[in-house]
Image (tube, rainbow, N blue to C red; front, side, top):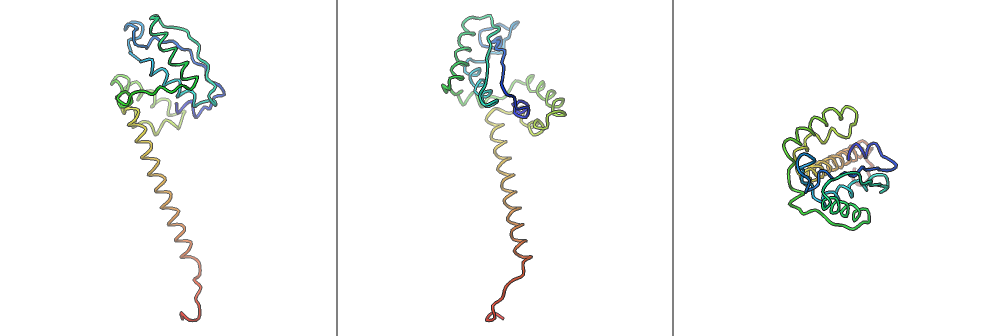
Length: 168
């Protein structure tokens, strides 16, 4: 998402193969991504390009999995909210996935500066990474307000003080 946000596309085209969906055996997928998760990912993509997202069905071999995932994606496109359970959002990624993502971030961050801050969040759950991002934003905002306060106080100290004759 950070690369997509930095790229700022006019439209998002998705080749919607659902091989990673629950129901597909390991040789084809084996990742057990739920239909709700596909809907969640679609909602994430709708934050790009002013919501102009095109999904083109192109794969999948388990008819039930294709139907469930497609329904969740169309529901997301229609604005029907079906959130993921908190337990899912708190799951940490698979260790092999973390290693792959770390390598991708290492290479791609050379070209996409928005990836550098994410290096420390790869092994975190979705909610954990969001919390860390919020905490960092709060810290930056607090430091900025302190800096403004110091600059304001310094500016006041630099101004000549006016004295009335009674105080002298």
